[in-house]
Image 1 (cartoon, rainbow, N blue to C red):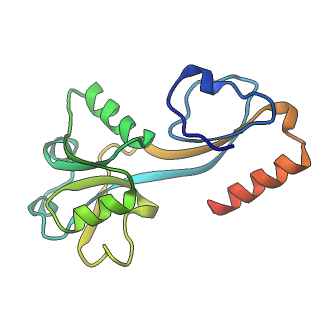
Image 2: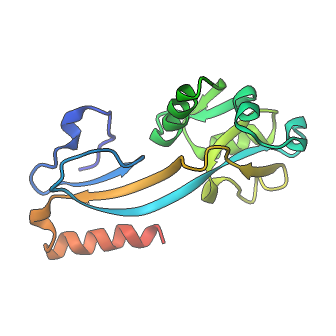
Length: 170
């Protein structure tokens, strides 16, 4: 049974034979839960190669001053907003889109920028139009954790499923 996480604290409780896969940063959860980090990807700043900002050094103030497209509902991009807020900054989000693919497409045809995990920043369609820059908050990463209850740590079926999921991220 698959479901999206909403942020409700009750979702941190692994019940029965559930296997949780989380997209986002590591946060304090039940100490007994087993977990495996299957992805820890750095963000990059994606912009159109004709964007005038590409000639400048990508500093945090410059990044915050640009107009952005944001992948809505992605914990990783909410962490970016939280980190900016702690530094007294915020980004001007012009569009919210449902996927990295949509963000790439919009960036490729506008002067908007996007923070995207490096592995999904460039594809064959957007590559001719876009360039990437190091993200000015290198400690902010896009992470995916696989979690399970310790009583299923040696369960053959769950071990197999966990190995299959982890393999997809290699």
